[in-house]
Image (cartoon, rainbow, N blue to C red; front, side, top):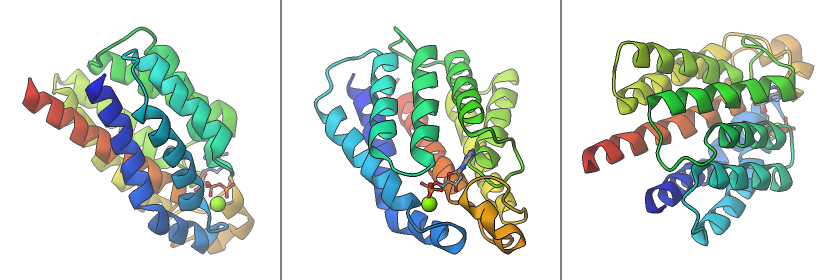
Amino acid sequence: MRSLNMAIEALANIIIANKEKLTEIDAAIGDADHGINMARGFEAVRAKVAANTNDDIGAVLKMVGVTLISTVGGASGPLYGTAFMRAALAAQGKKTVDGELAEKMFAAAIAGIKERGKAVRGEKTMLDALEPAYDALTQGLASRKSLAECLEMASSAALAGVEYTKTIIATKGRASYLGERSLGHQDAGATSSYLMLTVLAEIAQNLGREE
Ligand code: ADP
Ligand code: MG
């Protein structure tokens, strides 16, 4: 439970620490609130997790999802909320995460975002960080790398995905109103996804060292 709570806190901390940066990115091609939205949601998550005594990963991720849906305004709340709720379903009753479970949770999260947002890769959204990250994770697992290494690969792939969003036109979300003017700017949601993946990679590395 301690490492579970710490993992969720670390996710909350990175988003809260990047509140201004994410908002600035959203200011260029959106409505300048992504950092504000996400930080509000993760402040609420952080408060709840501080009191958490449940060690069921599914139950805790469900709490995260419900909290994000109910506190984050904007498109990203329901999308990330759904992602956490779907990952929660895959992790129901589990107390530890191995490669196989991580892959399942990640796949479920992405499927949830796609259903909810009706977006696909290449539309300048969080999916442009998440899908390449998932591909990197599955490739790493297939070549028998440790979960920590796979998450590191996933995080690098997500960063490449963020860079890629600068080169494409937004066709979903508010940035799509700008058409070609969205070129040259990175997507805010892809950036927050990348930040969360860097934290997950770090957590896996630290847990690996403790063993
Ligand atoms: P809003 O766009 O309502 O102001 P946010 O600023 O919090 O909400 O979040 C914007 C981010 O949400 C975008 O940068 C993009 O990554 C993501 N997003 C928007 N619409 C979709 C969608 N249909 N599918 C996937 N992601 C989306
Ligand atoms: Mg916005």
